[in-house]
Image (tube, rainbow, N blue to C red):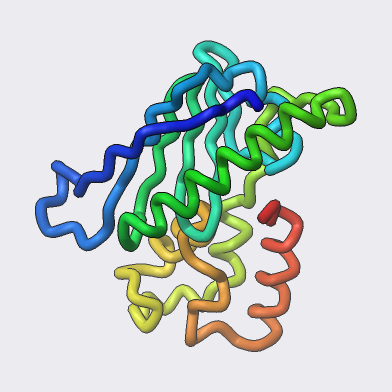
Amino acid sequence: MLLTGYTLEIFRSKCHAGAQTLHCFAHLHDDVSQALPYLNTVLGGFSYTREPPSLTLKNSGKLITIHARKIAVNALQDEEQAEKIVAWLQREINDAWEARQKIEPSVTGAIQPSLMEILKLLPKTNCRQCGQPTCMVFAVRVMEGAKDGNACPALADDKREKLSAYLAQFRFE
């Protein structure tokens, strides 16, 4: 077992006083940097940095960054969700490390969707029915993985199918 435990630090954003979501840092008891290339292969990391080693993942609209001795998770509903995600990551880190002889390590990030390709398929009406101020902002949120392309109520069915097919090639969850 590579990662034996962690201590959670849960907090609200200091930049946005009225923020409804929580953030957390999991301070790791062990250095997991050697496991990151294997974890990147298994979980399909969004971004990988070699020095200092870190892996950023997108999962259910959350950005998760794993450093050698810390994990950062944003946009959490509550402490229970923080614990659940970090416990899952601990299992994934340990499983990837245990299976490292069978995994081809990767130090490159995943190919990301193009903002322009997403925007081309949107109605560009800026209707705000999706909860975003413009179609461009909505497209950015879809590109980041924070919004599902189906969250655009004004999207025509044929465009919805094309957007779903386009985005499907970038999903690693």
